[in-house]
Image (cartoon, rainbow, N blue to C red; front, top):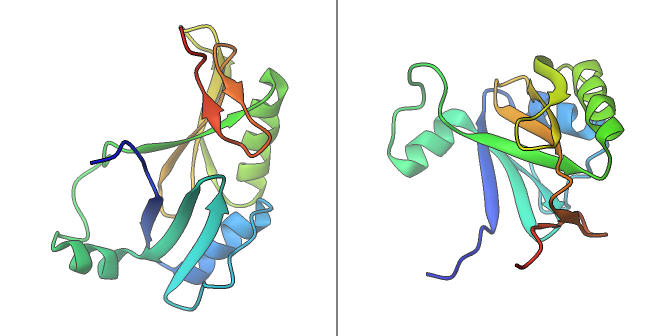
Length: 142
């Protein structure tokens, strides 16, 4: 298996509501989107919104479990100040701040929000990495 992630798909309660949340953040849905699924191009990865029950059925798992799923998505930014700006933007769009921006033990600055379906997002400035023009994040080779 090649080392690659091609899609990240979130199972959501209401695709229209979830799509509106991400579009309010300035994201542009791809033309391949429809009432059953929404796609956003994110650098070299496609981010998809799919009905939670349909996604669970497709994967042959239960659609609801207990507590935190153990998954956090990350959105890295170019400056420390952008962390607070993105958190504020997410809150204004209907997200919930889980942890305001603060200094991280690893030397960066980070905070967390959840979208309307309680998917956890980290917003981080990492001075040890490089963010490309296309939004791709890379650690420098050693």
